Each structure stands twice: as structure tokens, then as C-alpha cells.
Length: 188
Image (tube, rainbow, N blue to C red):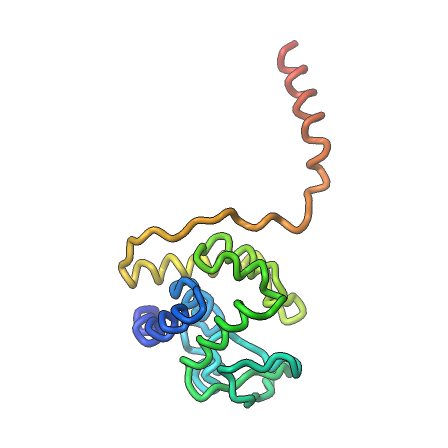
């Protein structure tokens, strides 16, 4: 499936889900494109799972998932199975808007830059599964830009302040001292 075919096939599903759970549909499509290889993955084709959503625990029931799942022969993970991709778009948006793990991400569902940082630093990404947080963040932004070009929209997106980094650079406290030394040395 080409990128254009992916957008044509899934854009309205993302848009409808985003009307129920506030979300930029292009951000949803960008994440789905990454998770499914632009719709070509087994998960997308067979499970109708457009976001790599796993079964989760007993508290992970949602109004958009019928409870079916299958085990990946590659990873051993239990993935949700949907009757159709539209249910998965609704389910994904429901997850982001209702599960505590995504409190930060839900603040930025209209801003690709802040959202990509937040979701890539959330439990959605797992290094144990081979995920790379930085690569994931960059892929979402690149996919968003590609989709925006395909859709042909030039509408401005809502910009919000990006989430604060969860770790502080250990060199940050000595930066003023280093700058002071550099300035003193330069004025001699």
C-alpha cells in the first residue's frame, strides 16, 4: 500500500474517532502509519490493529474492543484483534484519553511536536520490545509531515508548550560557572 492509499483508506476513520476523542486526525494517522508500516503489517491486515495495541490487563477493557486477541509468534505479545480498523482508531483514541499512563500525551493531541515527545517517553514505547524512543519520536513527525502534504492541508496546528524533559542534564548546574570562566578568559 502506498502512503497515499493509506491516507485515503484510513483518514476518515481517524477523523471520526478524533471527533469523539479530541485528537488531530493527522497525528493519529502518523502514529498508525509508523505502527503498521503504512498499513502493510500483519497486525493491520489480519488483526485490524492499527496501533500495535496489546491485550492489556483486566482493567484494559474499552467500549471499542470486543475482547478478542491473538499471540504474536514473533514476540509472544498478546495483541488486540478488531472487527474493523475503525474500531481500532476509536480504541486508540479512547486509550490516550482515558488511561492514566497517557496523562501527559493527552495534553498534546493537537500538537505533533509535543505529542511525539510525550508519547515516545510514555509506557506506549518499550525498549524491551526493541523500541527506540528517539527514532519513534522522529518517525511520528516525519509521517505527520508526509500525511499533511498528501492531505494538502495548510491549516495551522495548535501549538502548545512541549512537555518538560523527565531527566535533567547533569552538566546543567555547572553551565553558569563554565560560561563565567569563558567570558573572563575572553576579556583578557
